[in-house]
Amino acid sequence: MNVDNSSASSAILSSLNGSRSAGSNADTGTNSLGKDSFLQLLVTQMNNQNPLEPQDNTAFVSQLAQFSSLESMQNLDGTLGSFYSSFQSSQALQASSLVGRSVIVASDKAQLESGATLDGSLAMPMSGDGVQVKIYDDSGELVRTIDLGTQKGGNVDFKWDGKDEDGNFVASGTYKFKASGSFGGTNIDLATYLPATVNSVTLGQNGEGMTLNLAGIGSVRASSVQTIGK
Image (cartoon, rainbow, N blue to C red):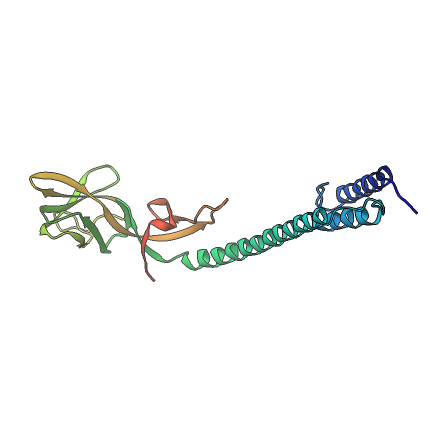
């Protein structure tokens, strides 16, 4: 029995419409063709081709290659989805382990309890002299100056005993640190690294990293953390 091209086209279109209808009733709510629909159309085309003018083999090979490409893309999409889910779970586990721990971050602020001490550091771009750290309270009043003299390039540690210039312990609160040094006769502000306690962690969205909510400092990127303590 001969089947003309118009009959084949009608059968393919009927199969196409049926596939789209089935897709629109799926849970995903989409009417796009999936790999099953694509294969169904290919088989329908083969069954309804004109035996006197069969489909060229090259065309079938091309369609099979398209089907293989479609299937590979769907498999890759599933793999990436699984990987992203695993990444989110790992990120959540890492976040929960940071809450309550002390970290060292690049900041000019730190919270201090009365009677406690504070260990910090500053970054020296090169050797310099007249290096000092000035500490201010919430009102902007200078409460202490720590003189470090001449220092070499690199990270320089400093320690504040929690006392003001008169030797009295300061009140609990958030304090601001301003480090500076003289380099070739020019006074330059220096970056400070100070301790803080992680109160909570906000997980990143749309590929963004975690944000740490630190006591007395606020929110900082997890990538800005220099050291994680106990």
